[in-house]
Amino acid sequence: MQNLKFFRKQKGMRQLDLALEIGKSSNYINSIENGKYFPSPETIENIALSLGIEPVRLFGNCEESEKEKITETVLNIEETLKIEVLESIQKAFSKIKNA
Figure 1 (tube, rainbow, N blue to C red):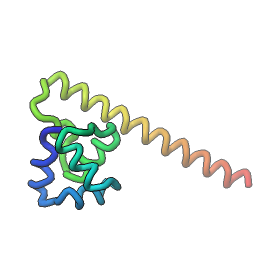
Figure 2 (figure 1 turned 120 degrees about the vertical axis):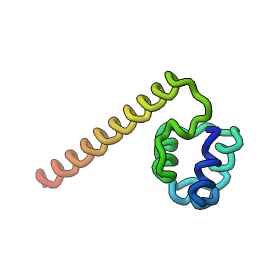
Figure 3 (figure 1 turned 60 degrees about the vertical axis):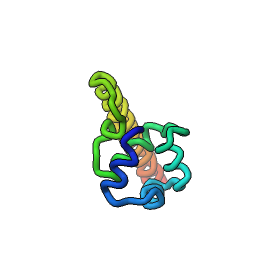
């Protein structure tokens, strides 16, 4: 994630600031910025949201087709998470209704 440090600094955030916003440690952010660790798609989405950018902008000089694949993957994950949340809400309402 070659551009993480650039966008974080552009937003005036310290590693600790970003870490707190996404529920991670500053060591975790440092490891990502230094290429020691690659975050999950969900964490990539959270980082991008915190920085106010599209997730693909975190990736350096990706080929356009790679960017499209990454974007599609992130959007699919986002949709899956929305469905899971809706299903959880439906289950909760069902339990309340049947109680």
